[in-house]
Length: 375
Image (cartoon, rainbow, N blue to C red; front, top):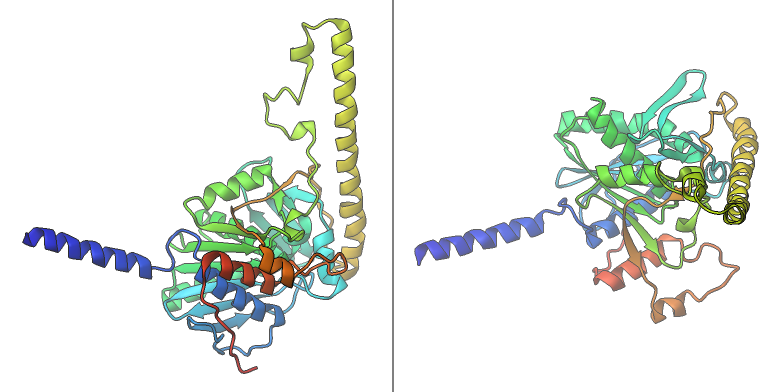
């Protein structure tokens, strides 16, 4: 009897301890809501250092970067339970910030980018040589992530912080995705301590890389430590446009080469199938080349007007953009549609943080948390 009671008490303690561990794997709606509120502050960048955020949990602004690159910026927040928050700002109302989005050619997910005459950004975001990523957001990562590494190493040594949350919304979500890959791979290279645990919330994020990048991202963040959160009416996560050509398939796919399959067929069958396939494949190849031309080479000329020392990289001839991360879908209902009725003139009405918060609170019954901050 006593042993049974003891086991029951231990089980209750274990359950309570687990429920209080907010940094455990799994999507935590309350945590995500806090991070969205933090990210809203990052977007305005108008709270002084050392100021408390005003959300339910205690978050103190520890560091804010200068605006750099293509109008990129990030902040470091510290939570009162020894958790750090890395918050990336999204697109701002400035043409330079939008350049990062439209400069949408692909580069290898491992390599180096010459940002300026004093900086070659060396990076590794995936193991596969077939993995590719969006060059515009890689520029932002190249400017921001060295500071992220420096500040995380500092709070690791000075404050013994080993749990890190990563948040970004929109373009910030793209940067959060790429930064997650960089930091996790940097741990194996000794740049970041290997016992730091990262958990990422990539909110309203567009697609940042190809299928092989997404495979790597989902593998290194397995067991519930990285999420891509989407409002089902938000068009931004549908971008950039994905183009898949025959050469994008893995080796062994009959779509790469129909010759072995058609070799034993009659002449007219080979002629008809080859002709049909070549017409389909030719259109995708042309589309990919045009994408690389207009969103790569031509867009780079505009980027160089802002960053004159930037050197145009060799592009990966690939535009097969795919989503990365465990999807969390926020599905609009009648109440949402009444508040946010479809209106083509309101381009970003479903993309902003407030619609995401509304859907989150309804879907997960999260208590509304308000920002009460002295500005």
